[in-house]
Length: 96
Image (cartoon, rainbow, N blue to C red; front, top):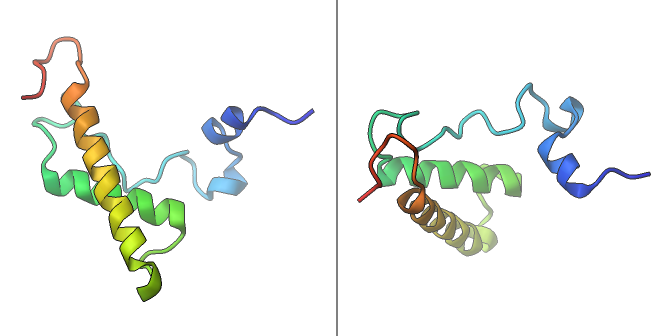
């Protein structure tokens, strides 16, 4: 019996991920209290870029893929900003 897809995504074997954690080590949590202040636009964009690099398997896209690569970074950064704007963490004020 094959495991559910969600199990494979959440708990991939170490041989698949190549290191001890399930998330790219370069992507950090971008919300207080994990970081002392709100994430900057630069930090959010850097995390989006790391995500797109990880998912696509390319550090930098070929010229014919540049537009779709950059659009993905923009869309993920925008989604991340909306997520951080909407998250409420107990004991911290809502992001303004």
